[in-house]
Length: 634
Image 1 (cartoon, rainbow, N blue to C red):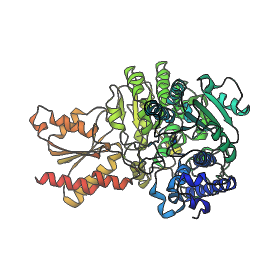
Image 2 (image 1 turned 45 degrees about the vertical axis):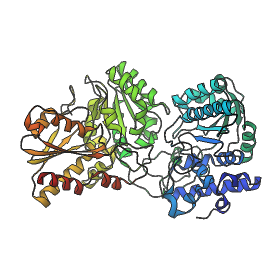
Image 3 (image 1 turned 90 degrees about the horizontal axis):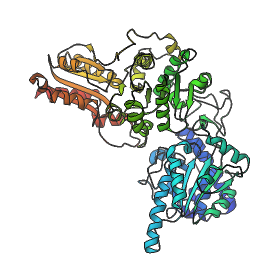
């Protein structure tokens, strides 16, 4: 891939020197580079295509890193990286993996923060500006110049963004808040504030009331947000401002994105047929997989998400309180556009506002409804206070669907490995971990049914489970599978998933698998028998919020070693609790039992392949068997 003028850009200083005509040429080359990169490598393409001109204009007018840019979420920072010495990571296919999909100070001095979650840019910018101003008061100068936060209209629905706006107005001083308004989050925007933004766009920024002025902020509007020259003029007008100012820029997300061929099954489009191009304001261009023209099977998140939604949908007509809630990002979790349209008032997108979504669910449940709140494990982290207070403390019957939980090869801002220590240590929160799709539907049916219980979290099955179900022909079309589903008996009353199941009885060694690790635990048992002549016990745990004392006590008889396997952080996790149960027992038979725990280390990982992480953590069949044999030989 060649890039012409882009090849000559090694730092922002090179962007400063470009003529007006060269700015246009550079924007065109960057857009072509993004499209080619997305086709070959994948990534957040739509958000970056929308800010090509804005980012070029920012680096033409401002002087990074003296002037500080804070990109909210920072999934739209590809262009920024190209202009700050990292262009080859997007133009040279052999170097595609060199940079992350988000800003990262370890890569460049032009990146202030590691960011991958939403809504925090204004608050971070306030902090940078505050320290700069205080340094200036003492010494007359500071290491930081202009401070610029770039936040999308979708991110504005996050509560912390409003907290930042409120603080910015009070703090004063140089602070430039660029609102990148492309009329979308990942899907459409939801919330009352977006009507106000639409009126501002329709009136060229003159409509009242103006939410930003209401905060006490200066306000300016740029309609042509994909015109680099209009943006240069606007940015020059706010550069070196002595007070906080909002620059509201209207852009087109995914500008130029027109993939050929059919759309991947389960993705969400623009209300177009599969053969039409997806360009502009379109959910499907937010994330592009390599070779989008190839139909690929659904990943676990979409597969089990579609199956869950399909099982709930027939109940809507007779259950007015059954409501699915998604704090944005619905398509990632199998909540398809078609489902949303059919669900009507039974589906609510709260925007990127997980804390509100959790408290909202508590209100629905308190009124007698059965809310189902679905989002990523990494996004549930923002709801910890609501998990403890509004949901668990109030013992309301809400159901939480946790997607993307477990060890993954994602970047360091989106790891799902930390969910179990967080959820399992909240009092009165029932945490379930299905080992297959049918068990997931049973858990969902019980959690959303008439039983008297508090909040239930269901850790949705992952890729290892889906792979096993596909290998055994169980993973046919998720919607058909939900239609064929018949609930198990005993799904009313007290939680039917508290006890561990002895799948295969044996002796000497007992291997306990939790949720996604059941396939691995079963593989260990088979190989112990086939290769080492060991008749070991296989047990499965369908929940991780409490221990099955009876089952653990029983395992102490006839076994010398208990092995726990989990695909989450060991520190504070499930396996440690099993170890503590035996270690603290007063019965000598229990306290003398050896226990091995297998799971993830307490660390942030950045784009490390899952297989490599499993090797690192000893979460492989060979590693587990090796440790079992070594302990038994001692």
